[in-house]
Image (cartoon, rainbow, N blue to C red; front, side, top):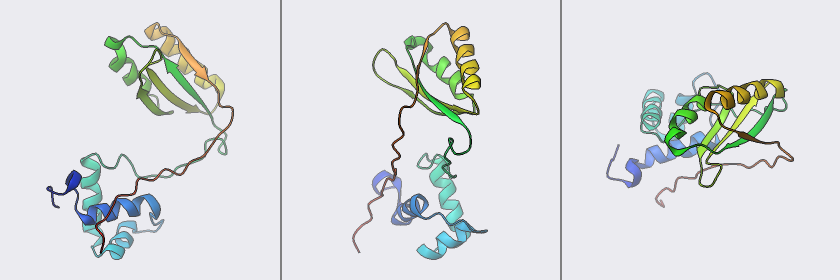
Length: 160
C-alpha cells in the first residue's frame, strides 16, 4: 500500500471502501467476490479490509436493521456533563450494548447519545441508573418522525 497517497490509501483501498459501502456481497465468500471485481485474491482483499479497519477507516461491517420493525424502541438523549467527568460518563454510556451513538457536542447539553432497547421501561431503567450514579439529568427526546437517509462516503478515484 502506498502510504504517500492521500490519507495513506492506494487506489485498490479506495475501490474496496467504495464497494463495501454499496455492494457488499451476501455470499459464502464475500471477500473472494470483492477481490474478483478489483483483481485481487480473496485473501489479499480480506487482509486489506482488516488493515483498513485497524487503521480506523472502517469501524464495522454489518447490517443496518430497522429497530422499529423488530419491535424495539429508541430514544435520543442529551446530558449536561461537567467537562472533567465527560470521559468517565461517556464510557459508562457506551458500555450499554443498546447505545448506538454517543457524541460530545458543544453547548449546554454536551453529551448526546441514542439508546435502543426492547421497551421504554428498559430504556428508562438504564437512564435512571445513569442519573443516580453520576448525579446528572438526562434530557429525553422522543422521536416524532423518522427521516431515513442513505449515508455513503464516496472515495474519489483518479480518472482513468
